[in-house]
Length: 346
Image (cartoon, rainbow, N blue to C red; front, side):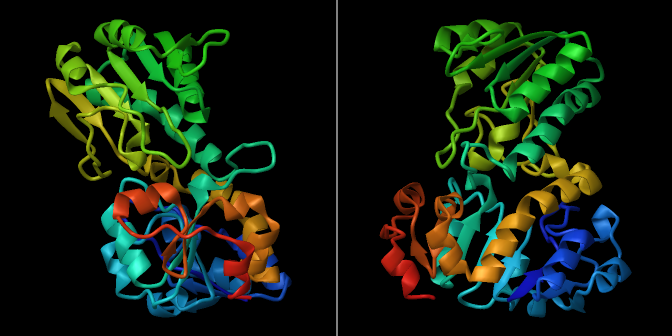
């Protein structure tokens, strides 16, 4: 199969989807790799690294013209200029909460397989989890930098990898940490509205890391509550790609990461791990490689038929919306991703 790796165009995005060692393994398995010039430069991989791994260095349009495009972030406006109709994309897509982008991709007949929805047989998220760990670990450092001091009282919403890493980082720095989640367990309270209100009003920092796969982020911090929080307290909304946990959150970028709403500092950068590009790229590449080898070796449709891990991550198939939430948000018809539908493409 011809596999393309375009350079990321999202502001501040320095990661690359496949590191040279993953490219080398794909080439060794008989596949052709088209890597856009300078695709890995932000992560510390130069073009010679990819040439030595057996890749062909190409312009953006050629990378996008591959049978399978593997990238980190959802297509940006600049990518649509290079993307052919009918492209097959394997990446973090975050189309839930982004109906305009979803409609645009559907209109181009795209097949979209979302990294954030891939689940292994034990229900874990092999592609999302390592990025969540990096984002969670970074959250306390981010807050310290923007507040100009270490937060003393920290509220963490969620109990996934990002939330637990955020709690660990804050605790290691000496902060008093409270974790609220859907279910109570040792060290974690239930995130009832009353508990959220009580702890949010006391917090110097709220790390919003509640994530429900395939659904918009739950709005656990209503505007009325944010308005009552400490002046110049901070919210780091790690869940912003799914819409954010705070009603007051809106997407920001690495270039302009914060804003003040209702007297509270908000940090809502969707690609936090891009600030750690080498580590993040290596982790993503290692996690993505088995799935890319599967699709490249067996064909995309056949791989989806054989793997529930991949099938459940398909948001669009040849322009048809195969995810119920995306269909609801876009107003487009929902089409079940059946073996029959996939067989039409094999």
